[in-house]
Length: 324
Image (cartoon, rainbow, N blue to C red; front, side, top):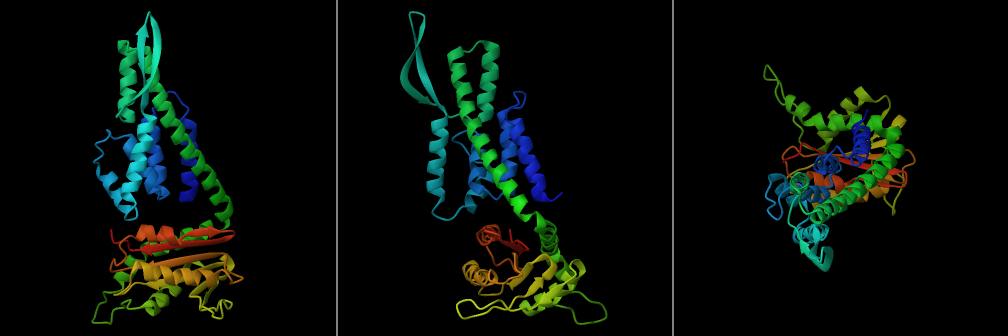
């Protein structure tokens, strides 16, 4: 079972669990956080983290790390929107008792309380005879939050199902390439030491990277073709690093160097992607960016920006090693 298939199964289990009265909403939120991490959905991860942390004192390390991953200039706007959502979900109606009747005054009070604290208040309220109308208001707050979590899980379940049904054919090939790229730096580092004064193999540029990668790909794939040309695009062609013919996967390699930056690498790949889409044998473009010196400051962000699916054309980008 691939990681994506496991995530889909986990999401389905969480969707089923959310309606189980014996499972607390805080436990569901922890599961939703795991799903958000796998999906690199940082904004939802911050929302879930805030839900289970006393409000407004959100100071956990994970909250700070996630916030740092948001684009610069977006943090303030996002936090304002986030706390507006949380504030709106925690409004409680004020009541008064007149002649033995409950009267809702029409005013609302904001409750700054996290989900675990809400659950504890409800449990204690049931045991100690809390005003039943206040108890109902607390339960309604949890219901609103629960509905938001349910919507998030349902959307992800639908997206994961679509991704699995459209990429199942390529799943095994992409898993192999992920393994190769994830372990490549360990492999390259081992080649730098040789006995008896023999010359070590150092990766100085993309030609060295292609030389080694070709040998590795031959271990995993039957038909590996080097340096094919793409059809002309805007009067120019591009030379493909490797075509895995049987899998319809093109592998494009990049190596960072001094003076490289995320913007320049991204621009180069965006231009290449447009050309690779014209190749009749390319259904999946796998871009591997080798970054041994940790030049790329936000590798996960760049991976997300350069990974996409347009119709039947899939682009997956992987950067290794990651410098953080």
